[in-house]
Image 1 (cartoon, helix red, strand yellow):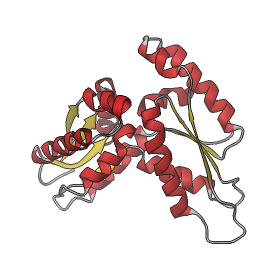
Image 2 (image 1 turned 180 degrees about the vertical axis):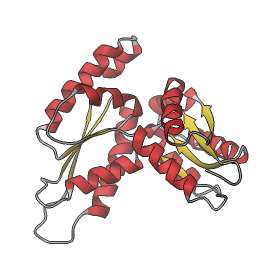
Image 3 (image 1 turned 90 degrees about the vertical axis):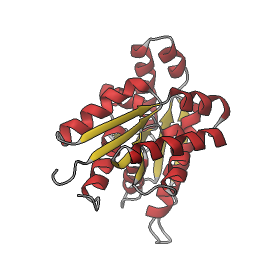
Image 4 (image 1 turned 45 degrees about the vertical axis):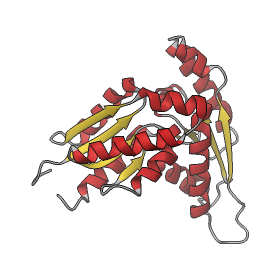
Length: 235
């Protein structure tokens, strides 16, 4: 990238995931400045109380800070606050990207291909994520649905992976990932595509071998972020 120093802004609610996203951005754009901001309170509150007005206000404040720090676009890496992300995007001057948006569009495209069964399985380990990502996938499926009367409607089945969040909280990451992997294998039997709603679930995708795509959000979210920066008028 050339011209003015361009920067990517990344807002996290799980501080430990910052390194994962930093590596993904750096690998594709080595000279791009990367500005990370982490606020674990956002996810704690969303899990306990939902996406409250205070959460929405905080997301907007963080995005505005990243914009003022020089970010040409901002990726919010937490799916649980996806709807607050969309609200913030309407009030700032740079693109603000939901980490799960690209994944949702891809899932909808797969499920509406000719010959597809029209079934999308959405899995999450946190109830706070299941609703926002499930609604996003349903919206994407509606936008992709063919207009032919003979095509069946798309069914989005959202499921919480029982016990995975508790195992992760205990520090038993291996058990948490095995629970996710087992649920993916079962869900894949009845779906065209499986969607892993949280970025933290991406590692589990490598543990399974199923005949349908298993989508996770980090790579697609970063690709969308870099595309927005490439298209920036500052470039």
